[in-house]
Structure formats: structure tokens, C-alpha cells
Image (cartoon, rainbow, N blue to C red; front, side, top):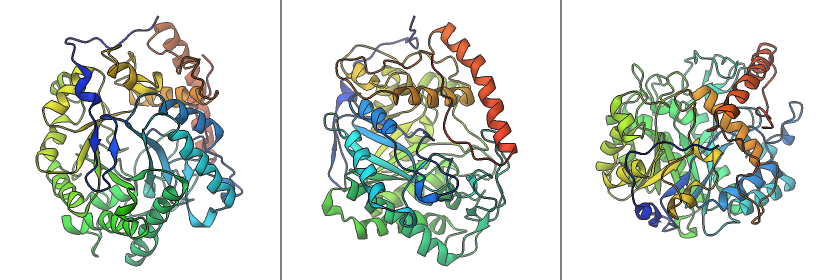
Length: 451
């Protein structure tokens, strides 16, 4: 039997149903909910032919068509990588001129149509480059802001010694890759893009002193470490002008929670610069692979739900017009409304809770529920992340049907018996991940578990 997160206080959801107008593009989100990016890892993969990799699949279209009927104002994709080598994982969706084809462009048009099949939600692609966080099996010497190696293990895989990009490569390759991908998204029918500059990926590697020891115009001072993201924005706008109504946002860490990492004061400076040049929105998160921070670190964050509430409140107070979304930790209507009323954010990003319940925003806005379904692994990001991947795979197995429960076929981890069976079954999949990583074979896909 389903269980929900306990609530100590109910709240009126009317605030969450309010519209948001983006300041530069002037596009309107129908409510304050955004589906946050979640790694999918199920796009096409052929290790022997890059041109066959990274196509959005019919299954992904099935899932996003369901999300589009789930009540979100903004639908954000998972990682869409702008470089066919530097992936977050085998199975990422890919946009790059070296692998372009008429077939890929048609697949992206179908992808955009799935995002926009529901009533009036905005469809946004998240664009990223993993940089030094590219799994070792995909790149022995990945590119990076500097040659500082990532000392971590993810899904059984380590990471190679990175090669620092030259000044010319940053401007002529990285900037152009992101701009090309944004124009590609526009041509396919998406409403906008989000530049992923958080969680230790390539763009985040430039803004943090833990990963950037450069001495050129992209390193050292706060101004220099902010430069790349500003140049990407300007390059996008040269290809897709403001007059098109195309939305451009950015994902940004509010804090990195590690020695020498990005501090909130640095983030404030950077966010003010993003507002100045014309980004429509900032999504605030926090942490890196080395220090995830996707859990409650203090009693105050438990009470206020959002992991990064206090940092987001400081950042938003320094801004004037740019829209701020906050992602991480929200589970109750009261917590969401409180964050908005206290000035920590304008919009609510939801990730792991919505893989159990693809229509959670609709249920909240209509007054059916006051909280998300209970997740027994909320404070264990590893298992919770695997479970979300499995639930998304389950959502992909059937197309949207208005006559059927949108969540049909998705395992209910709020049920103790279901959760325990999944946890036991996951052990063999984890062993497989480690075995493949040790053999140097890229891990593609997720745990395909039938509950």
C-alpha cells in the first residue's frame, strides 16, 4: 500500500499554480513547477560507431509524453551532451555536428513533440559536457579546465587524467559546441536550453578553484572563471536571437561543500553576471561527485526541506529580475510554498520524487495530495538514484494513454515489500556494473527491473 511523506502542516497550493514570466525571452511557464534533469542513459549506443550513438529513443518519447501530461510548467531533459566523446554516461542523448544526420534531426523533432504533447508546458533541453567526469571506459584522457584528476568512483568506474583545454579550444570548440546544440534544439522545436554548469561537469570545472588552476583569461579571478558561461550565452544568442522567444537558462551550484570549492559569495557574483547578460533563469543546486550533498546535512535543512535553501535565499536576494528555480529536497507542499514565500526561489525543481509519480504537480495543484510518495532511500543517494533510473525505464515501456493511470507499471518503493525486493535484486546489477568497469566496457542503460 502506498505511503506518503508525513506532513506536520498542510498548505494551500495556489502559490505553486501561479505563472512565471521569463525576463528576456518573455515566455510564460504555466506554473512554478519544473521537472529537473535526471540521468537517463538509455539513448542509442554503439561503441563501434559514434554516428549511431545518442539518438533519443521511442521509449524516451513515451516517458516525456507522460511527463508532459503531469502538470509541469517546464519540462527539462536529462543530460544532452554536446560532445560525442565526453559523455556523463554511455546512453546520453547527443548533439554534435560530427554525428549529425537527417535521421537524427527527425528523431529530435519527435523528441520535442513528445515534450510538448501536453497542455502548454515549456520544453527545455539541458546541454552539458562531462569534461573530466567522463567515465574512464569512454576517455582515458578527457578534456578539462585543468589537468586535475577526479578521485572518485561512480557506478564502478574511475576517471582518467584530464588534458587541460587550450585557450583557443575553449573559445573555438567548447563555446561553439554549446551554441551549435542550442540552435539544433531550436530547429527541432524545443522552447529553450539550459546550460549545465553544476555538479562538477565541464562548465562547473571552469568556475571552481578546485578544478581550475588556469592562468589565462578563463582562470584565476572570479571574472575570468565566469567568462566561459557568458561567452556561451552570447554565442547562443548570435544563432538564436532573443526575438525568437527561445529560453536560455543555466544550472549553477549554490555551494560545493568541499575545501577550496565554490562558495556562496562566488555564486552570487556569477549569478548577477548571468542576470546582467540576459539568462532567463538559474536553477540552483549544489555539490559534486566528490561531495554529493544530495542529503540533509543539518537540522535546519530537514526543517526547511530544501537542501540548499539558505544559500539560494542569499543568492536570490542579490538578484532583481532573473527567475530562480531551486532543486533538491522538496517533498511537501508546505515546504515548497515556504521556500517561495521566504524568497529562496521563484520555482520548484523536482527530480527523484517524480519518477515514482509522474503527475505529482497535477495532484498538488488540484489539491489531491500534500506530499510526495515516501522514498525509503531519501538519504541514500546511491540506491535512490538507481531506483529513479529503473522507474524512468518502466515509464518508457508504454506510450501515453489518457485512459490509463499515468503511473501504471512504475514500482511503488513506498511499499516496504516492493522496496526490499528491489534492493536485493539491485545487488546483482551493481556487481555487473563493477565487472564491466573493471573490464573497460562502458556501462549503457539502467537496471531493467520488472516489479
